[in-house]
Length: 418
Image (cartoon, rainbow, N blue to C red; front, side, top):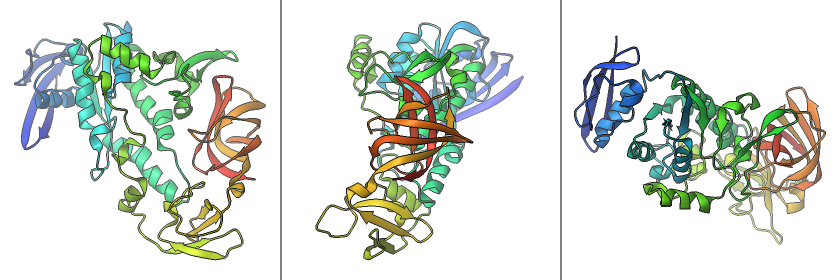
């Protein structure tokens, strides 16, 4: 027999739950404020029991420590963010679905944590969506793991003079690794998420692919997903757009039908990344702003406040527009110049090709258009020769390679050249 405790507190109130488990069944419990007694229920059944918010939180914290369920070929684990996309994914997953939400680290000094996809408010919304349909929901508290795997590398990358993409790192590795591991414990045959992407067969294997709706396509952020896992993953929204998703949620009577979009870089909790980095130790440090010849044009208080392609906030005056071209962490210098000096045609990336590719369309930023390129595989990554110049490319960003709609490679940009 295993005995576990879970607690939750808010606004000075505290709830505590104790459960004792033998195998997959609860044999004793102290939990007041739930809709039904827990004794005799399996862990899967207990995860579907609603109750007062604090008590339900405490129960979720207890269940997460021991949760497991016997395998079922019809069970689908659904990653729930508390928003409309994952709620509709839950609808599509059927009556044997189980929701799972990752509670991730948020900057406690951020101004808008409630809108983040991993906030306590989002966890509650996700759980209530599941419970309203009689479905189980499990919360995994991964705040410390997320901080080590995503937040700390984000800070270190800026300190090195890079411009990291934490959403690619989170979605392409950390998040799905945790979700797939949970799906296995939950006895689920598949993992579904509310991402706008597809899975297609290409070159004899399953590959990630663009969503049908270009405006919502999230394949860039998911490009680091190992194709070996795609046979266990399902993107039920990949063939539709956001308007259809909201309409489907409204027709089903889901309260989250009109919930606002979650933020990118959720751990910033609505704050500017510069303020966040300063609080994480990258303090003010005066340095020079120079042109391409090394002539000093002004000063700044930290190279990490500038990203390639930035035009506003440079603090220098000129007769023509100037842009941040690059930064030098060693000398704390920011180099500025005209837009044409931002042009890049050669890119190296640390990553992998999922299938052989001599030519591909390449996206070097999330919102940038794809550019045709010649691809050469190298040890630990690949090199790209772009057919036309890209602008605002930065080390630390993600290069994603497409053949048609299929993602055929991805990697972190390590070097750029004209």
